[in-house]
Image 1 (cartoon, rainbow, N blue to C red):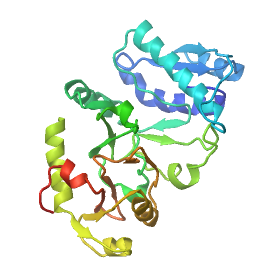
Image 2 (cartoon, rainbow, N blue to C red):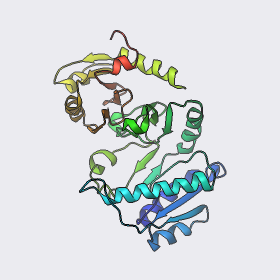
Image 3 (cartoon, one colour):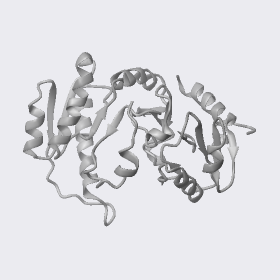
Image 4 (cartoon, rainbow, N blue to C red):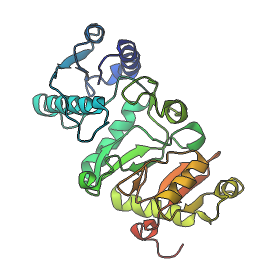
Length: 293
């Protein structure tokens, strides 16, 4: 997905082609450009290994609320158009989306090929992501471990379905300049480290949470640092979650009752070593079927 950054697009395409050529028949490559930037168009067309699409929409954007960033509306319109092209015109039934400021890991395509079986067999999964918001190197350890991530965090949209995300990212965001204006880049995106079905997973995840040692008090970070093994920190509400998240340095964002990167209200990340930290919501234990913990 591209717009007006030919240098970024080139870096992304080169990263993809490095690992895509051996699996090109299974993963055909498309570039969809939003807008008329000629440098982006010529850059995309210079590659014979991909198909080029262009979305031109010059209609005036009407925002829902004053002060909203118009670019987000334009991006949404481009996404809808591009996905319509791929699903309806080209008849694909799965699509991997990359923006024009991403580099991929060597096992990027193997990761998605393996996850496709889960996507097909488990209807509680909405999609699979290569990205972990709390994937900075100090918070991750195991490249083989995947979590389930609510991406469309409005309940009316996700309808209880989940996103699978990896612990170690399979993509790296190098773009500081874009529609988000670099607001999270330095703190959260720049340090990102690259590298079975629902019922079984719930039991497995619940067991991890249940076995983690509970920690209480305002000095949760200090206590967690001095404990060997996994740690469980309970939060009461949104302000309490934000306070704890701020102490650990992870995303504080919260939307429609769902913290960023949460599964059943639980946000999990590694802290300093292989030790896991579970930030557990007030209703999380019930949702996970944990009776006594």
